[in-house]
Length: 279
Image (cartoon, rainbow, N blue to C red):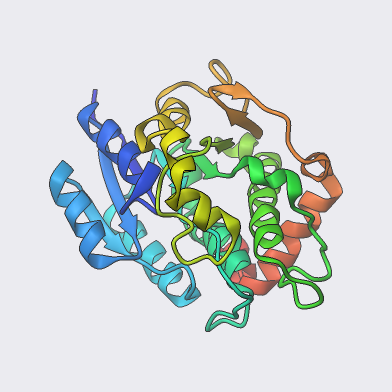
């Protein structure tokens, strides 16, 4: 059986890199995507994988990444949208969006839509890395860029909630076309994901609490499980998971109307109307 092609974003460190290593050892064709050229190349060379560099804080780089992936891989079996992180003070990207929102949600949303025809033709699985932090998020559909009220932790929790809403709406729109989707919480993992943040997360991750956290390998377990098992048989498409089991999310995560609204607003923000016409 030919190796499947698995694209993992945010794979230069943490659970993304760990998942890439595990899947490569299992014989999968892994494609490593990261923001840091040096770190991304190092992981790719370690496991003998292709790699691409893309910063999701710049949507033009996401579009370039999508074009590169489309050109090189006529088939993509798994897209793991793992890039993201918690930020510091409110900051706008070059595209004019609040950085937490763009890096964690808009970037993956754009990448997935740009690759949609490849993904549906491949009967692919799209995995979105969320977090239990979704519990303290709140999606204000009229203030997605948190212009009215911003806090570091709430912005992160909201972005992780948006990952789940994106997952459910992606299932609603494309499951009949062959796409399977899942969001998951990796657990409290000892990684560098909060390195740029001024929140308490950063201090927790750098202090004694880190000793009690999961290793990146443990955190990547559910990602690897979703990527290597059969949707519809081993897990239910469109759902949110933790420790290989369906998990409870923020009550907003089950609001179908909100999921549709978030999709439509996100589509307008990244101007994907031409993409949908192409499909």
